[in-house]
Image (cartoon, rainbow over all chains, first blue to last red; front, side):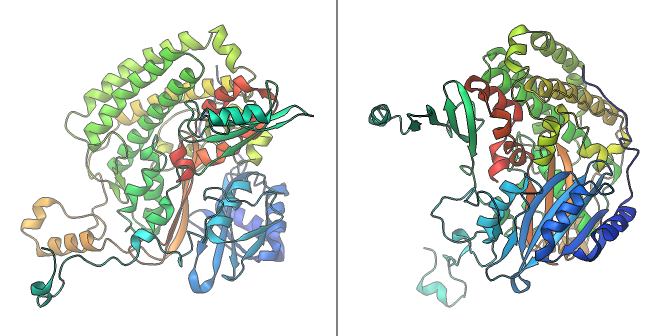
Length: 183
Length: 410
């Protein structure tokens, strides 16, 4: 039968604060601000350094972020786009979230599929939904949307057809009531 | 060969055979999206050399409805109704992970009873989801009786969910702040019944399958993925545990007070379909154990956070308190504002790590909701699992990864 073990699982668990210190010292000047929020380590990174940072997170023996969690983006409108990549260390039981700010015009970022193969579909989704080009991605074609789909649905500028202006069928002012409104 | 393709198309079969290379004898055929064994609308493009699959390419998106975008148009309370429809076999987990993320941003706590109800519902949901997996895995491999047994036991749970939430699926029950309604009177009876019956049923499944030579031949050494591959691709849940890594969000990042309960995380090292079967069977047993502990220690008290800024006041308050009426009106017409910020929450769904990234700009609608769905990630593992295996095993492999296309496509 299956083998089992009792809680708590890992004796090597590191507290998030201590882990953020490790991340800060290992990444050095490759990363910007490193902070801890809700027990997760948040790293802000320059777009040019993303592959370096991810390689360090994965390869460094004191970080060992061997498990790829997800990659997605947020459209911050005036402040451009923000790409979020989360990885976890199964050994030290910590999650690191890397944030990269990109401009809204022609956003592009180096692909991390070389480091984490699992980023493949996440980047494809992100590319079609936000219009971000992932340079070096092996197969950057549309994932969910049809080939001929135009636009990037998760951008705030993309309005859903069902949410665009639809006039209220009835009268909104007392004066109008005589002239029209719902019969 | 083109004649065959043409004849197929003339007969209305569509381009079933997509391509045939005379020299290398590689044939590209299409499987799905409407195929009984693809669990919804998964499409696979298989490159075959005789009976051997040389390459498998999953094609998804047939169920994509833009739910993440839709969440941005609802307020924080209403978005629960959207997220619960994503992974429709584990609706409680979807609601829970979203609610945890919103609660973190709000900075509110959930009372002990609310937490315990959440664990009770999600662990029962894990069993009901695994039962659907067992049913479909059996059916796909010709064990039709498993299909009947799995759905028969699941019905007991679905009835209980209906009793508690009013709905069989897409319950909209776990909401930011707690759960929207207390457990009804007499909720103990169906749970007790289930706890009595289910160990015998599990025994029955094991008697039927575990030592069954046909079952073993169809599952052992089929759809193998190594621990390294699974981790690199981000595979989670029973796939990862069957490949040998003991990684469970309930242990690593406990939520909703799950750390109070004693349970074990089953693992195997083979990484094949049979290992996933054993892991899931043991997980059902462990979940039942958690349910027993929750049942015995169900705390009394509030089942949701009673902060009037988040939770509508009780009905009887509305007739005598003006303040309650104002709170009620504000909550119903606008919802509540959530402080600006973002967070990533995760829970262990039946299929693995289910995550939710919520961004708030300080308004009453989520600015962005992203779901990290385990099925989506697990489907990426199909190509390495299927490479150089028999075409007959593809069906067993798909079933063992237990994809829910509603979650994959969102």
